[in-house]
Image (cartoon, rainbow, N blue to C red; front, top):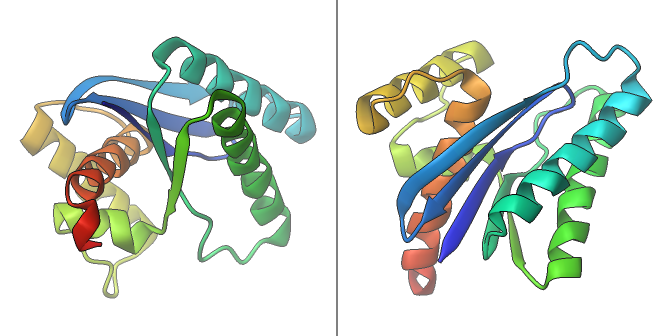
Length: 159
């Protein structure tokens, strides 16, 4: 079973691929140099879809939108998530949206009073320690989302 974890964002999106619970691949879609926001969002949706076409996962776990004070960014993230949901509908694949506290709980990362950058640093440290990889925060979060998806799928009767 191939499980994909996605940490979607408007500028940089991390994506991971697990096959039978083993991390097989990961990538970063980096469009931060594209300053035309509408075009960048469209390009992000297209690039995510292309990657999904290549990997063709059975299940996708994607971070749900939370803690977003900026309505404009919330709408943009929702569009990106919607494009992944659409890809799943077209390809008859399962999609699950996970709030950060849920996917972080699998790796033992607790929010508490930590700021966003501290949580990102913990994700990168976890990936370095458990996967022997030095990656940026977007890919680290995507790996943790995918890992959580594997755990949830394996124990789905318990959740």
